[in-house]
Length: 200
Image 1: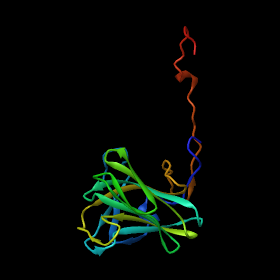
Image 2 (image 1 turned 90 degrees about the vertical axis):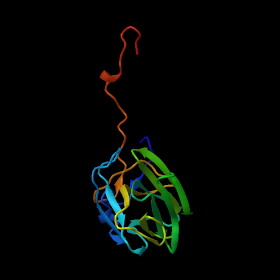
Image 3 (image 1 turned 60 degrees about the vertical axis):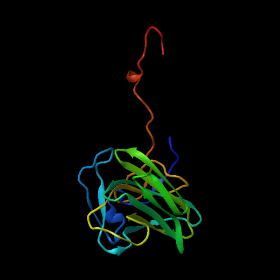
Image 4 (image 1 turned 180 degrees about the horizontal axis):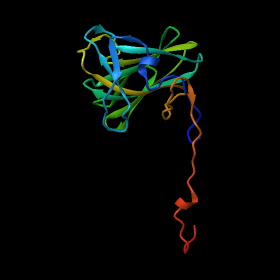
């Protein structure tokens, strides 16, 4: 492996409705084609209620271990989104991300936001667990109580929970946890660009 070994603990990484079925104040729907490197996204919209606007799922974790939760986001009327990991009796990792200023605001643990082009950002939070199971949250609009408008939201894609103190590249899943496939770092000899006179 070029990267270290990791497993994605989210069983349906590209179907938020399945992996994050407990939803409060949001709707999650298929997205029309989006510009940039990601096209198979979903759209998360905050309804008109006042309160939390989030989707929650669970992930099996080990107590006292660093875990990183990450997802790709693109603004669609809303610039603010968030991620959270709750273990034991408290949040061990939680942050909001402003997609217009490319800034993270950390409430618990640590967080990163990085552009991947086309208006998409890879956002991640990291913390040390205090229990043997985790509830993971995806937010739109705010980490806390807010009022949505029922139409604006964010595009999202590729949820990933992995054991480790930093995010690694995306590991897609479709029904089960998945460990990263081996990297095939090879090219055929015909692609070497051999120079008969100079030798290679």
